[in-house]
Image (tube, rainbow, N blue to C red):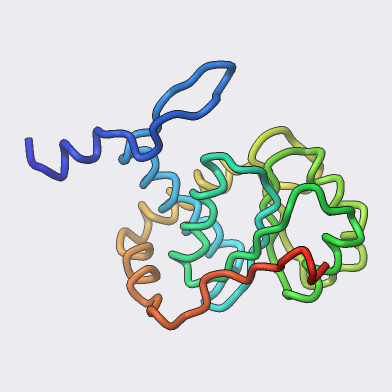
Length: 177
């Protein structure tokens, strides 16, 4: 067993709440989800310099999404979950987000309330739950994994194209809302 194989068995995230219990996410699983989501987002049209909003509390899917967006060359726009729909609208519009990733249906409903005024927002993704016209995170990861099987070097090429000087995130402080 190589060092890399041993390392991939170790947890990437030590513990989190899932189904009322705690469990680790292995480095292999973490990496698989980042790669799949990154390719899935690219399949939705996320290109280098494109923006994807992240409307979620702190949870494993947050960091998986952030890394997936960056690996595709995109820019993450984190949005505080307690903002009102009008404030979320302002941030999505001003930052020119094309995709929004929401942790729950309740947070998605805040976006849905203002979506008709956001012509650049083309896609929405939900970590948990379901909503009409919204992709599930697992569905998008599966799409990306299929793309990865068809084009095995796609993720590595996209991630290698990201440069140290590229914008990674746009953070709005409380004073900007």
